Length: 437
Image (cartoon, rainbow, N blue to C red; front, side, top):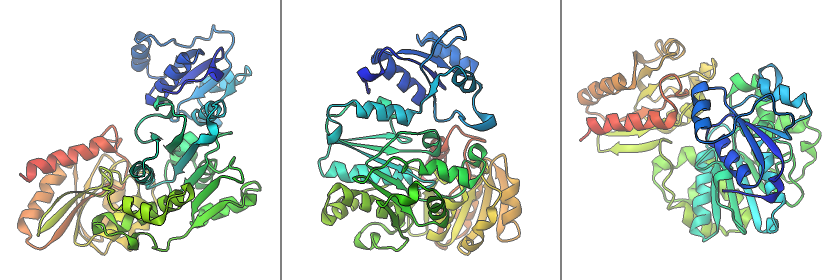
């Protein structure tokens, strides 16, 4: 847990008491601050209250800071009502990342600590895990936090080493002073538009990761046109000379002798990780040696079974069309299971990625978009649940002797039927384990 005297004797209201909110509350309390919480869900609010957390009341006369958890809207008409109320009374709004920056700035050993921050639409978890794996192999002291693993304020305090952070647009959106030593934006494709409304807003939220880096720090970004345009239009960002554009040329994975299934679609993750690790000071030889032992993450094009006739892949982390495209382009003779909570109506971007599909099984509450799209292009059926999809898959599996790829890559969020993509992925694995004994 992170603690600092710089937080003491100040008062805070934390809005949203999920893992992040609870970790910040405990950190601030242990730092000597006065802390209250607000939780919109009555049942969860009561549960938190019973654990000894103090609930905010309008009767409290003064609050120094209001700190919304990442899932809480902070801008425009959708901004949380308590944020509006408190900031109208001169309470300052502060983000999780800016609170972390204050913590860092008050460390005596700040110069011995480096912050590596990674954002993007797809590939964040794999990239930070790859960086973590490589630094760990080379005996560095490191903490991995953010959207993956522990919340930032639940990590261990270190005097020397690296904090590697996976960051979402929600975390970056209201950040003002956060200043990583090495920052990456892997890519930018449509996602979270219900929150950000437009791609420009979404992109600008991501670009906050670069706003405060100085001449001794480094930023890496994908060469997608929208990022380049947004940087060019930003009078501050287009003057930062230490932002490096990473192109799409496959120059990293050709050096790796790894399983073909873990290779091609992760090329961007390897390229960004390589640039970050070179910036840290590792030699190419040490980087590639560590890369070769990296085994990837669960539910990211994870091979859960293979034999001479088939390979079964769990890609539950595929929560948007672009991650689905990456899988469709990678494999051949595909029996596809997809569907879930749609993030974008622009499904036509799949048009150039259909040639390897044999059949599509659609699941989920929101089936119409997928069904209308696929039914005129390839054999398609809608079965609603993942259980029924695996039964349908088994019928195809037992009546076809040719080699096939059975790919579970939803291309949509999981929240219509599951708590998260991990729960969805575990359910698929469980169904397959019963099928193949």
